[in-house]
Image (cartoon, rainbow, N blue to C red):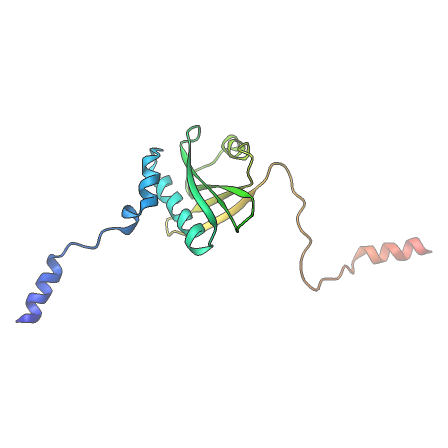
Length: 154
């Protein structure tokens, strides 16, 4: 009989509240009033990833009135330059003008796509083209260059 009453008591209890909605940073983001609850949720997930998982320093949220989004700012490590992060739900499109607006703030920028399963994909955005780093590994250039060198030596 006690097992049945325990089950009844357990079924009468409301489910635990959503901890995200009670987090102080989530409340702060809601007060910024960007009007897009999906973008607020995405910004919060990125905030948690940066501050709790990746251990970034001084992560804060800022409203961009022009774009009506929440931007995050933070330092990858102590003493590193401030970076701006634009968190967006993956289905939301982004324009060149909006990227330009974030880059014009003067900080390096990361665009973070947030999927519905909370997967986060970061993409570094730059002002102009950037030469890629050379590949790392035990690679040798044994192609046409050596052939050309032989021709030039003759």
